[in-house]
Image 1 (cartoon, rainbow, N blue to C red):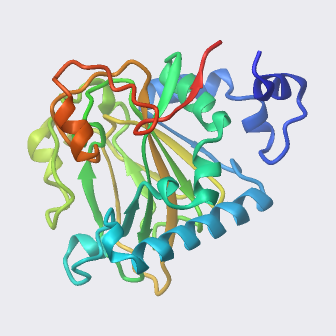
Image 2: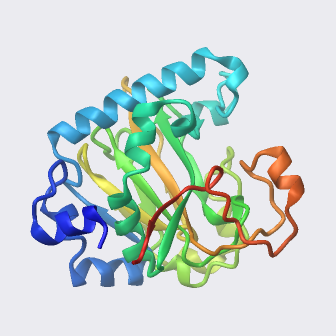
Length: 284
């Protein structure tokens, strides 16, 4: 048994609270399966939250200062999307502190448990910082953007600041992951474009999810979600990671795949390059 699993079993794992040490309750598992999302308050303790904030702030500042690095959305600062959030992708590739956080196998274990899969690979990490007076995040699905199609894809969203109704906390359409068809809407100026594709979801009351800093929200890659505008004078920071079930196959979409790797793939190939999509947890 891997060392980190032994530490969990023996209750000696430090840095995360009892929810992380003991994985998930039956009620949490059932809630995720039914609704397609799960909010876990107190996922990070104060020390861990401080580390996540420090790593995120440093990694984002470095990325934005290095325009040649790409993988951020701030090249046109006045564009609508740039004012939805500051988005910096694959920070673990360029910041060692972020790499340490994102490659933690305990995160992969929780994601795999919720997704019901035997192995988890990182698709990409990204900081999402909604600026002061920032635009709302239009309703969308995650997985249709990516280079694989899976009903078991899952994302982690960690609140680095209190996420409130005033600064644009997440909202979900419960159960939408069960009927989603891999059709999507972009995050544009029309906040509700997704409901033109899925008008049946208009009958489902959204779940609004304010949560304190240090909370984690896991959601299925096909669960409809959005966020309101930030009507406060301070940014709302979040660090996220998208996960791909081990064994997922290429669907023809490039997304964040490196050009050379993308051009080497054929639809149906297994995405198993450990440099591009690191395997962070696999069942023994």
